Image (tube, rainbow, N blue to C red; front, side, top):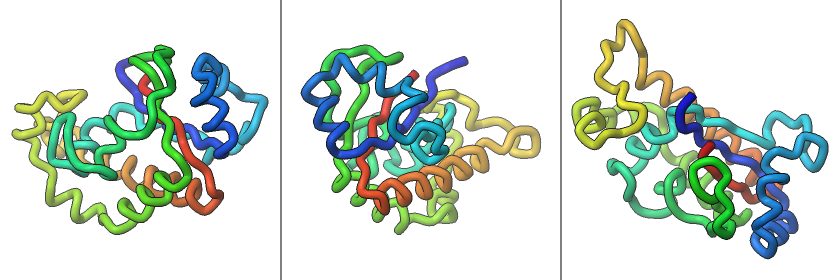
Length: 169
């Protein structure tokens, strides 16, 4: 299985409620009958591409500057409720809109130029597959596909005036 990063869109009122009562976060993350149920754009799973994407956006393993370090940092932690690999983080609609604008300004070609398999392996960027022969396993294509999905997901969330929760499961 492994570590999977998941984004879940949320209305501002829901974010406020979760920040006030973090113990509700597990129910919210696994709710299939409530708000946005059945809407494919309400949830995005980055699979195991998250860390490679973070590297391509920031040039770091766990650092980087806001807003582009949002995959591993930023937002407001939802208490100390462990939702898989630690607590979830909440981002406001304003933060989501800022992220969407920042990502829209970056092309897949720009990220392609930042791909450095040797450095990614040296930094132990999860899941340590970056030095595979591209003829056998297109690891860069894998990450870039998720980048385009993430851009679209955040753009739709911004257009709807939503924030999001991000968590590792």
